Length: 488
Ligand SMILES: Cc1cc2nc3c(=O)[nH]c(=O)nc-3n(C[C@H](O)[C@H](O)[C@H](O)COP(=O)(O)OP(=O)(O)OC[C@H]3O[C@@H](n4cnc5c(N)ncnc54)[C@H](O)[C@@H]3O)c2cc1C
Image 1: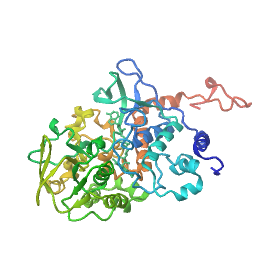
Image 2 (image 1 turned 60 degrees about the vertical axis):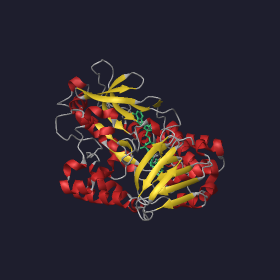
Image 3 (image 1 turned 180 degrees about the vertical axis):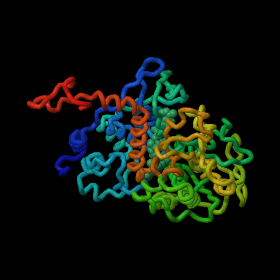
Image 4 (image 1 turned 180 degrees about the horizontal axis):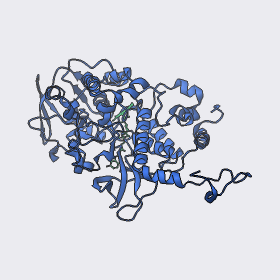
């Protein structure tokens, strides 16, 4: 953009440029995957993408670029509520630097920078410190619309089962579909769910906790916390941002507790955020991959300094380090927390304890989960004991596909591709954070393309034999097929 038009007009102009750029790339590529009918006589989907957050929509767009057009992208939330951005994320800005690319898949006019400059000009871009959270959501939705990716909002995947060599998916609409591939792009919690540490008197399933004890990544009505004293378990990004949101909404006090003696200081994932690491990590042998991610998981990641500054400025905000919780007791009128240093009484408690990796909790694929191969299955008992969290991660194949613990027991499992945080042990952070998205989505799309092609190789070769393209028809040297020598 030359900065001539800005604001909504600028965005509309950018959309035209981006669509022209896509057309120059022959997007969407012609579909090349042969049609196939399922047991119900309906056309089988080539890929069912589950989840239309940042990862799912980028995979959908990548598939269209690849000429794999017989896909559906389903999203259980309504339009604009995909991912955490305007629901459970509570930081004003993204942690990531503003220049990151990913959802654009390499098309300059689809980058966040292009989107921002179209509205605020080049100067606006220079002035921008970091990306506003809701701008990121608006940008993602703009990319989706611009690339013409159809997303079916309000449609959830309930379960997947194997039928012959196909996957049979039951959707929340009551519809069932057959698909050759299912991509689970179902978010950070998509390989487990909220993590609640275990305490003798606390049961996350107990209905008594409603309104008293929350996970920081669930929806919370902060207006109900005015004047309240809040205990937060955790000192990382979401814990702090939740504490701050509560205080800004009028809570009296928010105390963030940690087992550790101080905040983690170094964001190790920043140091490995370059294409060599992103492309190479998944190609390493098991020893290296295990070594890298057990270290990463143990190192943790500091909260962004912006979040800490946000908290520091708020009266009522505090940290308590080296004070782990021993028990949480939910009562009628409050919550009692026993720590290693004493007993605290709060009106409300927030668990800022992140997500768990536990494939057994992924209900959509319950038919398969007992046989999902985990890192625990490929490491020694001592290593598993020493790194219990890392050991729970699924052991994925080169195309993010789940693998069988016992080969042959659950046919179809290998056609489920896990494109969420659960893939980090196997591939690095390619299916979650923005920096790895381009490499991850590209790798997954290539793997799907490869699998779909090789599974149909006989048909492709038959088609190759049958193809008739009378290149020389306009010349004097055209020979009709029946008069040609050999196979030419
Ligand atoms: C609070 C927060 C802040 C973050 N900040 C940053 C940051 O600054 N920089 C960065 O790089 N990363 C950040 N991340 C990490 C990452 O970028 C986000 O988690 C991002 O949303 C990941 O995209 P996703 O597509 O994997 O998941 P999501 O955006 O969560 O999308 C998954 C989608 O799948 C849908 N879904 C789930 N199950 C089903 C089902 N069965 N059927 C249909 N739909 C389903 C969900 O509704 C959801 O919309 C942040 C994460 C959080 C939680």
